[in-house]
Image 1: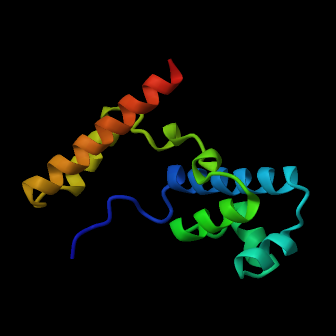
Image 2: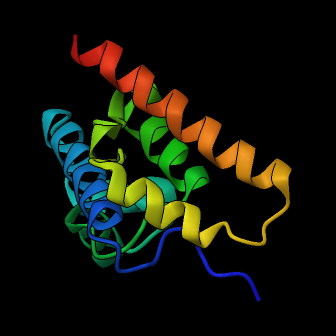
Length: 127
């Protein structure tokens, strides 16, 4: 069995979901909606919305889009800053490469190319 590239307890991934939840809360509050109202609009419970907003429950892509529609905003406008997912140093890249040992060359190339593009895109945004 292959090892996952990102573990569920990865602090950067956790930070990303916390930031996504904060974005949902901010937009919801800006729209003057309660958690219960948003929950009804998307078919969830109020406690699930509270967990999403706190980052305790990860938001699936389809749910993220439903939430954005329920709030009357484009999903892209609610995305948190993705720079927190970047590799901060060579050690992290080496760690990723260790996870890819034995993976097909196409997988290796895809992962490293994708990470390089994400880093370049984020660097352009921050310039």
